[in-house]
Length: 593
Ligand code: ADP
Ligand code: MG
Image (cartoon, rainbow, N blue to C red; front, side):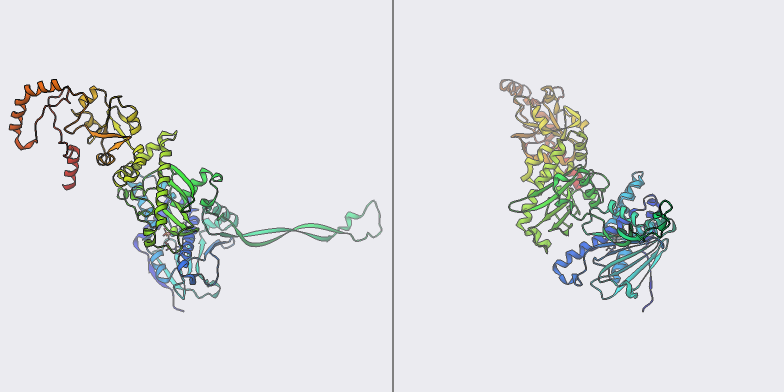
């Protein structure tokens, strides 16, 4: 047999291992969650590939995870019958970090350091395979990929900068398929090799893994056995004749070891919503999406009729870290299953428009083919119907948050995802009716608290026909603009659009409850209080003044007009009816600069 080859870890891996060990020492048990989730991922991959390559399942081995403990030697083994790894994959996967969970961990660590750091947060992230070294001196990974004839063994030690890979030669260790991890526990961590301890951790961490997890448990059954009765007992009152030998039955416990199913494998979305608690939904969310905060809302539903599917959707409590992903539709936020088989979480707007890509959840359909591909998804009529329903449910869920007694929830939602909804005004005309009631703005009468359009409409004057707005770069500058004077005097409320995207969003909406949005900084603002007689008089009196000013300013202004919109300022610069507002102009300048 060829000798073991030694490889150096990529530099980041060594650093990551230090970090994990230093930041998670008080939360060591997460190693089991991580390794089980890798086993479950490997089984998911196999099940998915086997849809088109049924050969992969030959040998008829079940898809499961088995965990065995050896108390005496301080060893835990975790065996899965998943996709396994080839020699090259061992190098790529266990010697470098290009992997999602790990990358997320490093990013969270950096962000939390940048933010002045709550290091506890780290314990909540998927930290991956290397967490094994929290409790292990030595880890041996023996793995067989269906792509390779040979089985390979990866071996690494804690605090080492290199690892080895060799071919598996021990015939007892050959696997039909999948991966066997042998964890040699550190002296102080040998307690993890107790069957009851492992059982408890599996129950706690892996309740939503959809493959059976068996743990190796000592069991006992009771048995009645016949024993000879002690003659001393039967001797009574000095009777001295030889007593007849009596038989007596006794209960004994017979011990043996066997595999015991330790998790519940019925996916939570298949259960009856009436029987699932909020805690269970939240736990499922946190475990599935590696989140550490409860979601703001969840919705579990089944649709019937034309297209049947089950789904649980969630609104996260915070937007993902980093600014880059506000409109990135390529999140891994929706996990699609077909008849319980995990198909993909790699979507690009097929199931949710990009402005709703922050919604997380699972969708399980019986109507899609198991070997559904990207192309099929994009063209499928079924998917289009699903998307419509999902979007509607997402809006119901958000509306629910906005009506919740706990006002904080919607504030949180708006702070994190308000921008997304505004983007929706621009990109999704069809859902304007659903988006508009969810929008929030400051106004001339509410400069500290955001109001909804419904609140605005309720507060409208009886004769008021339009919804007034004013775009500015802050509430303070909006408040100080001369455009406001007349409206304030007449006690008309004006929305302050202070987010750059607001104005475009509002212009796309055009109207709310049949009331048009009107920019108060535009030329022809009509407050419905024209006095034509008086206008004429004033025009005559000041006509020449206007001409004179226009002459002096020349091309700098389009025209100089008499206005009835000011009450104390002598003049104001307004934009033409069809021109850009000052705010828009500022935005365009910023973009081309
Ligand atoms: P992540 O699970 O986030 O990708 P990990 O560090 O947990 O990161 O695992 C790294 C990679 O190693 C996985 O993506 C997978 O390719 C591979 N791997 C780990 N455990 C197994 C396993 N039991 N079977 C097959 N591949 C595995
Ligand atoms: Mg992992």
